[in-house]
Each structure stands twice: as C-alpha cells, then as structure tokens.
Length: 347
Image (tube, rainbow, N blue to C red; front, side, top):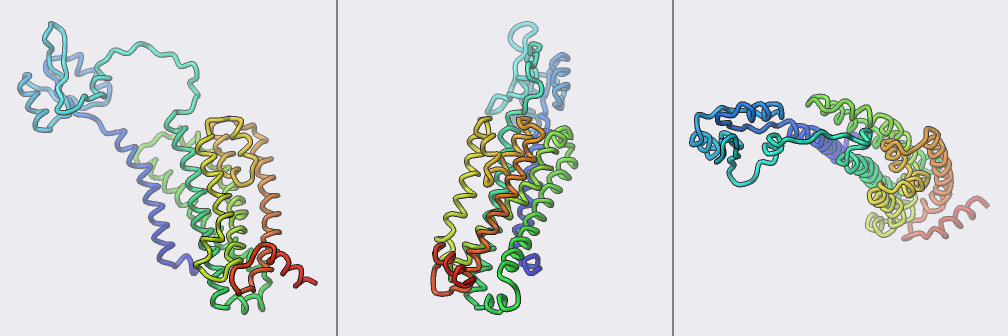
C-alpha cells in the first residue's frame, strides 16, 4: 500500500500506460493517414487513387496542379505526360511511393502461405513480450532488493523477525511486489486493447494474440515469483544500498540472457523449443511459440508445470539463504556463509 502511494511508482505506471497507448494509436493513425493528390484531366488515375484511399483534388491545368504542390495544399499531382495517354507525377523533394504504387498496374498474386505471420508482427510481438517481462522483472526486482537492504540498515528487520517468521517476510515481499507488477501488466494490456479499438485497429490481430496473451499471464506471474526470490536474497546478502549493484550480477544475468536469446533466436524453431522449457526464458519463449503456431496444445501445460517446480525449488533455496543472511549486518555476506549460518541457527 505504501508503494501504491509512492510518487515514483505512480509516475512510472503512468509513463508505461502512455507508452502503451502511443505505441498502439500512433501507428494506426499514420497507417490511416491518406495522401492528397491533385489530378488534371485523368478520370482513370483519379479512380485508382480514390480506391487506394487517397483524397483526390481536381486541378484545372498543369500550372494549377504544380502551384498546389508548391503551396503544400496537396502531397503530389498527377498531370498529363509528354506522350498521348501518358501521365506523370509532380512532387516537391521526394518520390511519392504511395502514389506511384496506386497508379501502377500490379499482376494478380497467389499467396502460398496465407496464414503466415506478418513480418512486422514477427518482429514487434517478440519485442513486446520480452521487454514487458524484462523491465518489470528488473524494476521490481531492484525495489525488492533495496527494500530488504533498507530494513537491514535501519535495524527494522530485527523487530520484524521477532514478530514474524523470516520466510513469511520473504513470501510477503514476493507476493506484494508481484501483485503490483501483475497490476501494471493488466493495465498495460487494457490500455493497449482499448486504444487499438478506439482507432479502429485490426480485431483479427487481437484474436491472433489472444492465446499468447492468455498464457503469458500465468507464465509471467510464476516467472516473476522465481526471479523475485533471487532479488530478495541479493538484498539480504549486503548491508548497504551501494553494494546492491555489485551483488546483483547473478540476478541480472538470468534476466538479461533469456531476454537477448529470445530476441535473437525467435526465428529458430529448435532454439525456441529449448528456451520454452528453460525456467528463466519460458515466460517469453512459450507464449511466442503459441503466437507463431509452433507449439502443441500440451506443451504450455508441461512448460508451466516445470516452471512451477523450478519456482518452488528456488523459493525454498532462497528462503534458506534469506534466513542465513538477513540478520548479518557486518558487510557483504557470501552464499556459503549464509548457508552455513542457517545450519548453525537450526542446530
């Protein structure tokens, strides 16, 4: 509840929502923007431009059409050419490719793979899934580590441990920050969907993304819990905020490595199959395989069960290290020392 009222958290949430809305609205607006073209005495050219979604303006002669272009009233002009029945295009400083394509006579095209994923989507969707998981895991993970270290610095942890079991503190931090991260993901998804519908986006795309998004949510939640336990241990191993960056190398590695592997290898089916079963990369790799249609119906279930097992094991190990290092305030604690401290306390 304190974090929800924190100004930094509120500003970052608003920023994420603005980016989500802008990334959805702006491409649609640019895609729907039509060129304005002046046409001199060619009904055929005017018809082709109109069918291409462009605004056609009639001009009296070539001089009038040229003046409209120079004044910026139209983007281009189509005027009679030098030969009989020919036309030419007038523009200011660059070739209007959209006008040229609209006037060109294209041959009929037969698609051999009409269900293939659009190349733009094939690039954007992996980037979106990977970046959401990457930034939220890093952002909230650092907050968890800083919170643990702050409690050690101020000695508040000694009061907390006297009233609450250490593992309960660990689970509470993971669940609390996990709820905030999940809330941000839901808000981002809602804003993106509403923005796409508001500008008349492709509803078929939403249907295509639906299964991948539906599976991304549970994978994100379990994957975040796994990584959050690592960040909590990172904060418990140090006694000063300044030492977190030096101790967070392993946690950052298990987040950054899958991020770049998924981005660079998403076109490799064999590599993506392997990554979809590795706990640290499964939250992004498996939803992507579902989006591309490369995964069988049983595969996400198996991958999620493996991720749940890895998260349970990681929390168990993290709990032991957390107990062995939380009350040590004499500098940085090694993993071996934290493990042995837990054994000493138990005996």
